Image 1 (cartoon, one colour):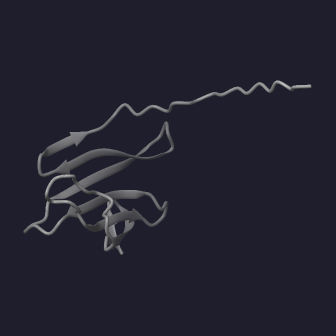
Image 2 (tube, one colour):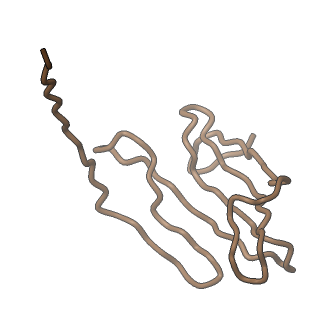
Image 3 (tube, one colour):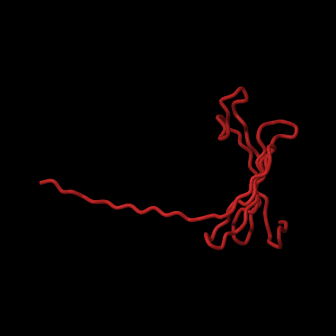
Amino acid sequence: MEKSGGAAVRYVGFEETSRPTIIRSDAAHGNFPARGYFLIDEGSGRVVRSEIALGHGVPPPSIVTSFRFDDDLQLNVPIEMRDPLGVATYGRFRRFSVETEEHLRLHD
């Protein structure tokens, strides 16, 4: 157990072993086997950070995503993603809703 921002957290690792991989390319590289971890807040079960390393380069390219709790949505949302090409930040999260209606016509 470790601490992150005062909260008790755990690292949960994973390694993708099956083919085809979830992330793949039509280019010559084909499959990108992923491995990495999720950093999880023990009290809430929420993901605080994830790191996914793709392929077998030295070091392999990786994607690191940080999350925070959104009071309006009442769930963790991604706030920053770093990859070899740069940094993306996210904000202004909104909840969308969908309404549907169904009308049945009976035939005699």
